[in-house]
Each structure stands twice: as C-alpha cells, then as structure tokens.
Length: 266
Image 1 (cartoon, rainbow, N blue to C red):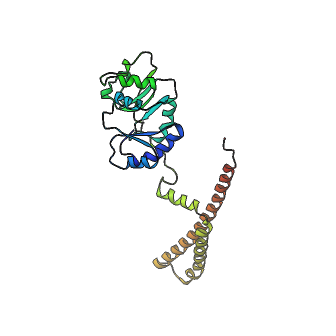
Image 2: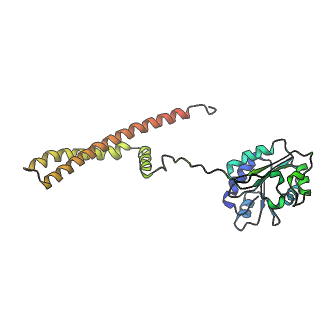
Image 3: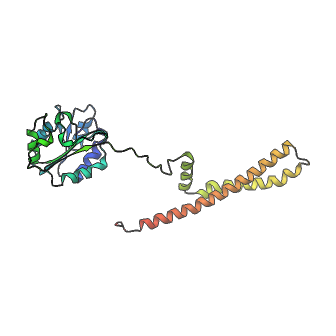
C-alpha cells in the first residue's frame, strides 16, 4: 500500500512474489505512473481514496480474500526493501493480529492503547478472523478492545537510529579513488613503468651532460640541478609504483580465484 512509488514498485513486487502466493497493490491516489507500472507487471491494483485507518483497511482486505494470512505493508520513506522478509516472518508467526504503527523515537506510550483514528499503520499481518474483528472495530477504539480470545501483538515502528557509515576505499577521498583506479588498472607497468624509465633515463643523461657545463654554482645552475634531480626521482618513483601495483594486482587476482573455488555454503 502506498502512493507515488513507481520507482520502487517493480523491485517490491518481484521480491514480494518470491515470498507470498499473491501480491496486490493498494494505491492511495498516486499521480505518477504507479498504477500504470503495476498493470504492466500484471499486478492487481485497488484504488483507495478513503481514510487510511486500520478498520477501513481491514474491511478492504477482507473482500474477495480467502488467504489464511494477509500482510499489508505501508510503503513510504521509512520502509526499506530489506525489511520485507522480516515482516513476512512475522506474518507466519502464531498471531491473529500483528500490527505496527508509525511513531517517533521518543514515543514510549503503550501501542495497544493507541486510538485507530490517531494512528498511521506501518504494517498489518492478520488471519481471516483477525481481519474480521478489525473491520468491525470503531475508529475511536484501540487494539486493547479487541476480542480477548485473539492473539494480538501491537508494536511501535520507530525510525532507525542514524549510524555513521564507513566509507569504502573507492569513495573515501580523491586520493583513495586514484589509488583504487591504479590498482584496478590492467597494465600498471605500461602506465607507470614506461614513463618512469623514460624520466629516469632523461634525468640520468641530464645529470652528466648539463651539470658538467656549469663552471660555478648560481641561481640558474642550482635551479637546473634541482630540476634534474626531480626528474630522476620522479622516474624512479614511477617505476617503483608500476612494479608495486603489478605485484598487488597479481595478489588480488590470486585471492579472487581462491575465493571463487570455495564452496558456496561456507
């Protein structure tokens, strides 16, 4: 159930079809191509323009529904695709009604005492008996007033805590991206080795041919001397980098080959 989620629709439906016998979409008045996209992938669509309350939705879910258990997922900014298997497992538990309401992180109230009129449903998993009882409820009632013989569990759906994610080598910094590109290069010896040999050879020849022509040290001779030394060191450094990257690339390929040979169940 959701509104304007055409970009997520296909992945959600495909994943849901792997976990459920039947998948349908309850559209809450989308203005994008959500309904059109659902029709393309042969997914049943029900348009709901009324109140998004538990009793109303339960009555909607009971129509032409013979499933032993029904799971309703409210798709919004908080819902992640990785949460779907967890909700499916909750639907398979021994509960007649298992539902969760969106709430703030600081909300410590009893979720069973929340009035349906003031609550926004996050997910609802219920058997046919549970849906029938919920559809009979009044919007001013609470889950605590359901039949005592029902197995009911109500939870808060709070936002996930914000945890600082570690950056990968490829996104940590510009230097790390450069190093990653150099490591993934197929021919580091060609990219760094050949220019390094050329620079080292030029610097070596200049050190003998150019510096011997200066009879005294002044600003010009010192500048030329430093430039020659810099060219020689750059060539030496490039050759070392090319050789190191070539060895590291071989090691990475060897590790990947060993990993691909490991049994898949380990």
